[in-house]
Image (tube, rainbow, N blue to C red):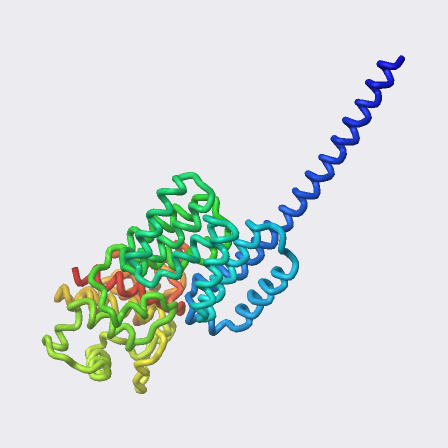
Length: 375
């Protein structure tokens, strides 16, 4: 009987102990889950701002304020978990860079490294604090070697690798780094934020010797006729038939290109009559306008002006003219240019059927095409 009582007592103690451990585990798991959720919210707030760069991020004052307030509120709530505090300090430093507070960013980096050595947000902060892209690349390669190919954080470090390769105009390597990052299981916010940079790198992968004055145009989602002239003049020989190798001002080049019909007077594909009023050199260039410029420069370099009517004589004659492209009328002045660009794969149909002629042309895409023609 005595042995039975001892056994029952031991069982009761075991149950109570097991219950205490389980409750403790649940509390720890719950706290870790909450801190992970909080860090994910911070990441979602800051990563898109990092992707556009400090200058553009500062123009988005509302988003910066929200990110700052999120960090301030979070700092008040957590103070025990060293790893969490280390990561929080790293995100504070990364936001400080965006706000132009570099001395604060350095301080936060030291604080983060001391609290949680080697945490990924801190590693990224250290990389971003290095101004020399070549030294930055050395740091990145060293971190990747330490982490190994399947470690947590491999995606974030490869994002930095892609950004650095892009800055160095090593576009093919940038594409590869971004693709590795996107396939690593990294949070969706990185894909959403950096896919446009990755796509620009893809467009520019075959370009070379890009002039410094053109670099700022490559990331633009819209460009003007003046921008087109800058890209062509400084990165190709396509305008030598007008300049003769002489240094002609952009305004003079614009006038000469208009006179030679290399630049169109309008960009609306539904209009069939040229207006008498000249366009502005600061007018935003659409895909239709870019197609006109590209195809006319292509015809000029080939010394074959027959290209300018090559498609209209096939499709736009007779009593029932037709167009193989849904949103480009067969009698449009842009018909030959757009069909020519599509057939030679200078430009593509957006959805396999439509050209979307009124959409703006991007700088990176235009430069890539101009260099292809020049080569």
